[in-house]
Amino acid sequence: ELKVEQNPLFLSMQEGKNYTIYCNYSTTSDRLYWYRQDPGKSLESLFVLLSNGAVKQEGRLMASLDTKARLSTLHITAAVHDLSATYFCAVEGPSSGAGSYQLTFGKGTKLSVIP
Amino acid sequence: DGGITQSPKYLFRKEGQNVTLSCEQNLNHDAMYWYRQDPGQGLRLIYYSQIVNDFQKGDIAEGYSVSREKKESFPLTVTSAQKNPTAFYLCASSRRGDRRNKNIQYFGAGTRLSVL
Image (cartoon, rainbow over all chains, first blue to last red):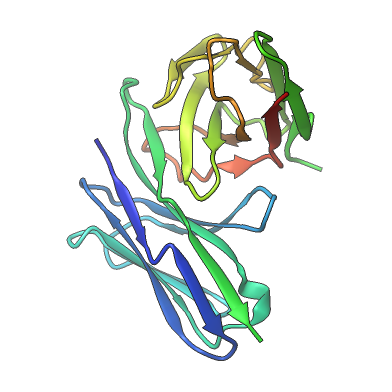
């Protein structure tokens, strides 16, 4: 059974600081997704990482994937208040349906950026 | 506008009642999914469907039922057998849940279900 663990689960940081969110998973996978969720809202796709060593950047966020370590990181550079949200990683793995691959989500990291 | 529409936004269920949550997509996606989100938790998969007239149980299917009669629609029924239905329910769709594609799932705005 695929398990996905994120840490930290809660993160309070000051504007302008840097920090990293970690996503570990338990079984082999080479596809990982990062999503953002604002309070009471839906999930928005941020990054798709499709191979070992993949790195994607968008603004102040950078995501990377190390499939050998079964680890993805989401790095926040010079945080701003608008980045306050909950961030989820999701790992793609085989499910019980033949030929079917589903996402298993971590519990999410709730990020609060304090002015 | 292409997207996923969930309705209603808020829903209240009485004891012993079945309720149905609607999910419609106009993205021409083959695969559709239902997730449940509890406070402080990640998303847990209830049911998914890769093609019309076919669906599979996810991790927490007990007390729920679905149908997929049309490509665009994947309604979820929360039955009276689901003893703890209070949660935020999210519907998603993707091109297809297999290895040929990037399976980015696009989500609807969600339905918040509460028990009266």
